[in-house]
Amino acid sequence: MLRRESLLSVPYRKAFDGAEDIDLVLRLASFGKILNMPSVLLKYRVHSAQSSFANRPRQTVLQELAIRLYYIRCSGNEDPVSQRQELVDDFVAWRLAQAGYYKTRMLLTMLRYVSMHIKGGEYGDAVQLLRQSSRYLDFSYRALIIVCKVLVNSSGALVHEKTPFNMLNTSPESLP
Image (cartoon, rainbow, N blue to C red):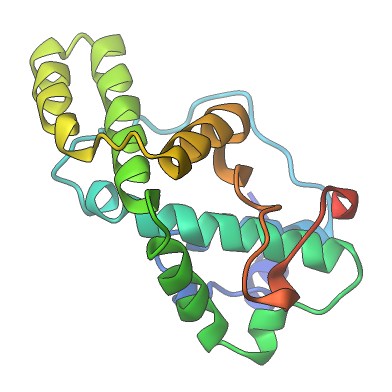
């Protein structure tokens, strides 16, 4: 729940399509405290045919970017995307072109969905996803680094890695 005025002053950014919610919430955080409600209000069915599954690598890049921008704003600097919209597409293209990134994110997404299917007692769906996941196995050094970082830090896993975009580089010291 939020005040209408806050939402009107911080609208969704189309460039973040697929991760617009996290971008919005992190921008709203500048207006006041953000809290999670302890109750589950929605049960969302997940399956490998939904568009968010196929677009997961792009969504994780956008989530990373939203978190980077949050840290930049928290350190008192202006959001570089507000000055240069094409920075979003440039960052997404750069991250998705990195060795191991796409396949690793797809594999991690599949394994997360497998876990959800098992918890929900949908064992046939879990087995089907496990079979499909083999095409995303990548044992390269970079892929293994990504897996380790994601398992430890989730969405913020790669936030402090250097990028070719100096205005987006953050450091752990910039944490709020």
